[in-house]
Length: 94
Image 1 (cartoon, rainbow, N blue to C red):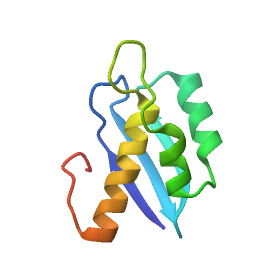
Image 2: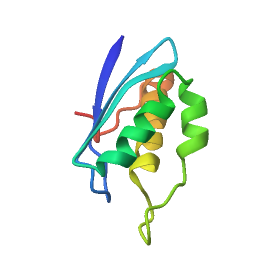
Image 3: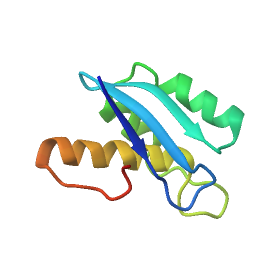
Image 4: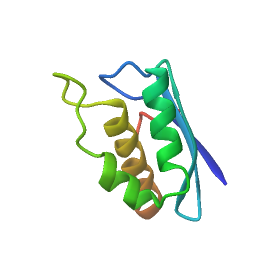
C-alpha cells in the first residue's frame, strides 16, 4: 500500500494524506481542516475506487472559493493517477 501526502492550495487544510491500494482509496486524513466535514469525507470515500472518488468530489466549491478540501482531494487523486499512468510529477506532493 502506498501512502501519499498532498499539500492543497486555496483551502484551510494544510495537508491531505491518503493511501491507495489496488485502485481503492484508504486512510484519508485532512490536517487543519473543518473537523466534522473532513471526517465525513474521509469515512464516505473509504473503500471506493479512485476514479469514483474523483467523480464525486471534483468541482465542489467552498463558499466563494474556486476550490474546496474535497476538490483538492480529487485533484490529489487525479495527480497521483497521472503520475502512476504517465510518470508526471506534481510538486504538491511531499
